[in-house]
Image (cartoon, rainbow, N blue to C red; front, side):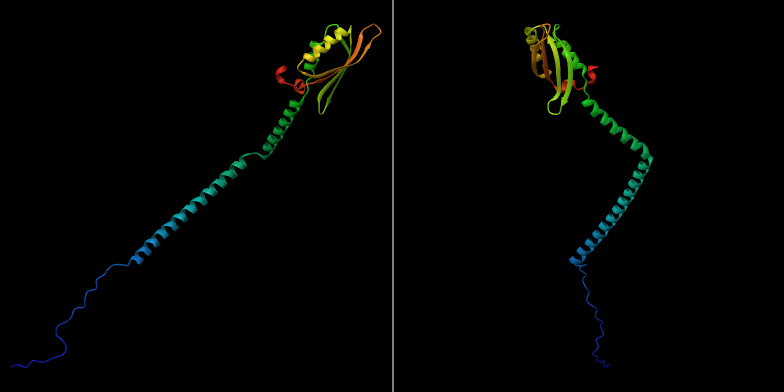
Length: 191
């Protein structure tokens, strides 16, 4: 019989057990996704910022060109002319036209009443104030004249005073009238 050799080292080779790969863990996958999204957001923000800076620089250059296109002396002249026009409008709005006042007196005065003195003034609080001295043939004619003035809507108040008889029998008087301010303000459409 042949002799068998006994050995404590096994003749058969053992294979290493296969490791089962379960893939990366949940946290590793989640971290990778967050890293990729952060990178994309950073890139988008960087390029958006670059576009905004480029746009701002373009607009600044466009504004500079537009500003340079205007002549500062011409702009100053426009500003000066505009201010003069505003001042002229203010003067025209406050300009007094006495022609309507004379028309009012002419149309409201009786044919047999005459005025010998005319004084026109303006007070700050009350506006235009008219004082006239006149003559009427009788007290009755003077009463009719007073009524004529009082009926006129452009006359705010009428006061007759200084009544006396003249050397030829006529009635001498002084009349004071307060005229409505809008009535004497110049209006272009009257012309």
